[in-house]
Image (cartoon, rainbow, N blue to C red; front, side):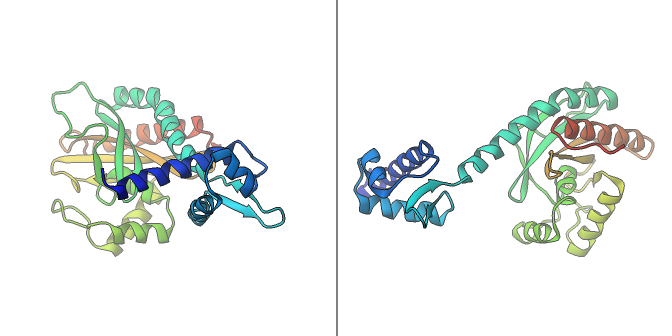
Length: 259
């Protein structure tokens, strides 16, 4: 290991030590007290605190010169907890959805410009979907991704589009931004999204968003199957069951249901 690598590891260890001490002192701590608690030189602490403050993990109270831990760590932890909560909340509902529609059901969350499948309920039929838990797909060409994007701000949608390598995966993939915006308008109107062979030829998916207690979209579920089964005669039933399921999961997560 090089000296530079050792320095980097040491810096991380020291920064974590500072965070731990700050967390034990919710009302703040002075530089001298922080130096005594961590056994680090004041100049080292100031350098590391500068980075932590710059990244919003801590702040300095001007009137008391005490350093205080911010809520940034709580926010990071909450993101992980939310993903675990939605998986737990969704489990029994997506199992019921699979039984009601007879097709594979996915639960996905956003990760940057992609979606990641965090749960899957396989249907008892002979055709298997080429998907797995942990698999990552672009948002713009999947029903779960589009269902999530339909609940984001215009700026967020534009940012995702600009940061994504937009590729025409099939002849049905939407690669024109204006057309995509119209697609999101349709999703908002219908309450669900459709991946009409846009990600994989021969496969049609319907997706619906999952909202938390604040009305923020935190995940989405989908029903996927071959176009021979997910067709004009079955889509009405599937979309009704899908939206009912997403509403139940959202309700369990605290989203207020309007009668």
